[in-house]
Amino acid sequence: MKVVIFGITGQDGSYLAELLVKKGYEVIGVTRRVSVNTLSRIEHILPQLTIVEGDITDGFNISKIIESHEPDEVYNLAAQSHVGTSFKQPSLTWDITGAGVLNILEAIRYSSRKDQIRFYQASSSEMFGKNYTTSENASLMMSDDKVVVDDPTGKGFYEYKKYQDENTPFIPQSPYGIAKLAAHHLVRNYRESYGIHGSCGILFNHESERRGEQFVTRKITKWIGEFVLWSNQSSMDIDTTSDPDFILDNGRKFPKLRLGNLDARRDWGHAADYVEAMWLMLQQDEPDDYVVATGETRSVREFLDASFSFVEVDDWSNLVVIDPEFYRAAEVEYLLGIPTKAKRKLGWSPRIDFKSLAERMVAYDVKEAGLQRPSIQTV
Ligand code: NAP
Ligand code: F7E
Image (tube, rainbow, N blue to C red; front, side):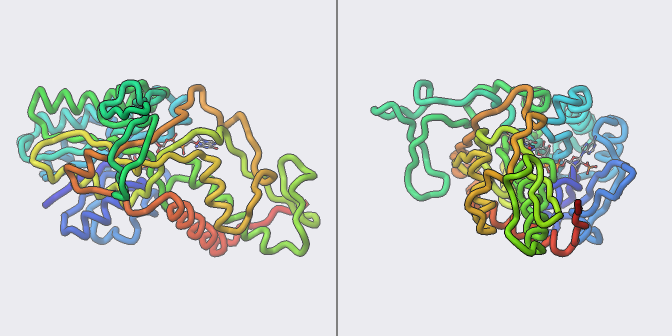
C-alpha cells in the first residue's frame, strides 16, 4: 500500500509517518522548499520515506504528485495551523488551509485512480468556534437538565452541560477556523458530487513532545525546561517579585513566561493517539466525519498547574506575566469533544490522559534544555 502525506514535517505528520511505516506502507511525504531544514521531526525515519517537493497552493504540482505516485491513501495535514497567526495573515491562511485543500480534491477528482484513492482531511474543533451543544438542545436529555453521554474513557457515564459532537453547528471564530470549515464542506461536497472517498477528522487539540513551540502547551513546557536549567544554577533563593518581567538571582536574570488568556478551555489529547484515528477512518468502507477528542475539558491555567507541579513548583503566579500581545481578536473559550462515534464505529479511544500529557512534555523539555545548555543572560 502506498500513501502520500501532505504536512509530513509537522507534529501529526511525523507521528502518522511512523505509524504507517510500522504498518508496512510505502510512505511518500510532501515537503515545501524553505530556507531551513524542516525535517527534524522525521529525521529518525527518513531512510524509510520518499520525500518529494510540493506546496498545496500549487495545484499542478499536487496533481503531478498524485498522478505519478499512485497512492492508495492521501492524508492532508498541511496547513497554516496557528490560530493567532491566522488573524495576522488571513489571506495566506485562506490560501493554504482553505484553497489548498481544493487543489488536492481537484487532483483526486481528475486522477485516473479517483475510485481507488481514500482521502483524509484534517478538520478542526476550531470550526465549532463559540458554539456548543447544551442541555437545552442536546439529543440525550436527562430529567435534571443535564446531558448524559457515553464516557469515552469507558469508566461509566459522565455528566456534561456543554460539549461539541458531530451534530453541533459550526460558528468559527478565526480566519483559520473559517478556512478549515470551507475545506470541511468541500470534502463533503466532493464526496457527494463525485463519489470521492473523503473523510474528515474533527480533531480537538492534541499536543506532544513534538508540538510547535508557538502553541500554548509547548510554549509553557519549553519555558519550564529552560527555567529549571537556569534555576539549578542558582546559588541562593531566586527573586520573583522585585521585577515585573524578570526573575532575578544574584545579578542574573531570566524572562518570565508571557501568556494571554489563561481561562480558555481546551480538550487536550496526545498526537500519537490521534493519528491512529486518522488511519482508522480510511480503513472504513464508507467515508464519514468523526470527532476525535478525550471528553475532558481543561483550562490553560490547569495545564500550568499540571506542568509546574511536575517540577515541584506549587505557586507559579509570580513566574507568569499576562501579556495582551497574546490575546486573540476573537477567542474560542470552551471546547469539550465527545468522541462516542469514533469509539463505536472505529473502536478508537485515547490512551494518554491530561496529566500524563503535561508530564511527558515537561520531562522532555527539561531534558532537552539540559542537553542544549542555553547561554544565561547576566546583568
Ligand atoms: P503543524 O505542526 O503546524 O504542521 C503543519 C504542516 O503543514 C507542516 O508540515 C508544514 O510544513 C505543512 N505546510 C504548511 N503550509 C504548507 C503548504 N503551503 N504546502 C505544503 N505543506 C505545508 O500542524 P499539526 O499540529 O501537525 O496539525 C496537522 C493538521 O491538523 C493541520 O492541518 C492542523 O491545522 C490540523 N489540526 C491540528 C490540531 C492540533 O491540535 N494539532 C487539531 C485539529 C486540526 P513546514 O514544516 O514546511 O512548515
Ligand atoms: O491556544 C490560549 C489561546 O495556540 C490554546 C491548533 O493546533 O488547536 C490549536 O489551536 C489556547 C487559546 O491552540 C497563549 O488564546 C493563552 O485559547 O495552543 P493554542 P488553539 O488556538 O486551540 C486547534 C484544534 C487547531 O486546529 C489548531 O491548528 O491558549 N493562550 N496564552 C495562548 N495561546 C498561544 N498560542 N500562546 C499564548 O501565549
